[in-house]
Structures are given as C-alpha cells and as structure tokens.
Picture (cartoon, rainbow, N blue to C red):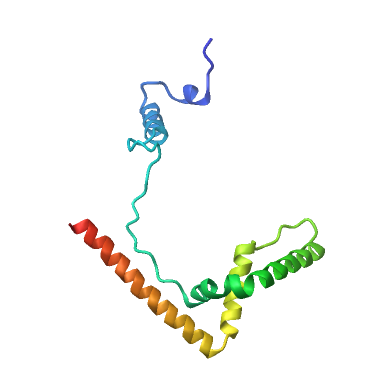
Amino acid sequence: MRYVNALDVKCTQNSHEWQRIKMWFHNHTRGSTSGSGTRGVLKITQPRLRQEWQVYQMMAYESKWKTIIDSEWEAYKKKWDEENPGVKVPQGRFAFMNSFLKNKYAEETEEVKADVRKRRAAMKVELNAETDERNNAYQT
C-alpha cells in the first residue's frame, strides 16, 4: 500500500513543481566528492586585525580578570534570577565578559593602553606577513 503525502496530492510526478522539488532534494542532500564527506568553504576573506579591547583581553584575561569575571558573572546571574524569576538571563557569559572587558579597558591607564597598541601593531605586522605568505603560496 502506498502512502499519500501532501506533495503527491498537490502535484503529479510529471509536473514542473514536482521536478523542482526533486532537484532541490538532489542538490541539498547529497554529500561532497572530496573524500572527507563534508563540503568545505573557501576562506577568501583575510583575517581581521583585533580591536584594542580584544588585544587587551588576550593580554590580561587569564592573569588578571578571569576569576573576577567568573565571580561577577555568578553575582549577575543570581541578581537576575532574584529580580526576574523564571526569565532567562538576557546575555550569555561570553557577551557579559566582552562588555566587562571593554569597560575595564576604557578605565585603564595610558601606559597599559600604549602596551596594548604596541602589541596590536606587532599583530598587524604578523597578520600582513601571513597574508603575504599565503598569497605567494597561491601564486607559485
């Protein structure tokens, strides 16, 4: 016994709609031919230079801010749950950490900001060198 679905009722196998549906499934459900079984995506865009606060995060998160952020995050969640029972916290830990570090970077001394800018400039040189290397590899 053959089961009838909504597609069979609306269009016959020879209709234009049926052919479109059949081709869509063919194009979207088949695997790749690369051998790995997944389709890879070419990374055409170049890696971006990090913002100053992101470089600050790289430099100071583990040594200075991780434990403080963890305790602040727990306090934030506890306060939110007390004031809004049953409502999900509006931002996750990652977003909380980013906003916390942006504020802390804005409050830092000019000496620390100068160190961050130096590290960022060094990262820019490294990024440009990697990009040049990659471009040269494709051209040879």
